[in-house]
Image (cartoon, rainbow, N blue to C red):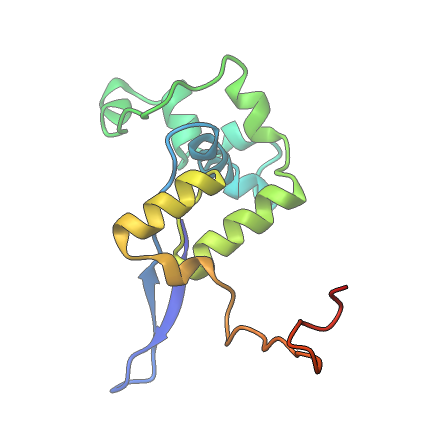
Length: 148
């Protein structure tokens, strides 16, 4: 789903390290696949995502049987109008949630699944923002400021 740069200590050459994160097997999986299959379109290399000959969307639709045989089956069915969906831009919310999962390597799914999966895999730290939690200021009577 993306790569981060890692500087090799001996040569100072950037090395790509693949980033990965668990993905819920439902519409969240399809969101990630839309993001991946529309990469060439997002980069402005093609007018339609299905025109990128080196992509899985093209391969599934127009590739040889041997090429299609290299592609893995998906854990969910593609919607009937998948190509139309891939060509539609991701919403700002979808992009932000995906970006967070890529940057933090945190599970991508609904909140309940995300929390359960993070706990099971020891990834709960990936669900929190960077840095220390803010301290809560207390007033003289022990309640936090802003409380009644």
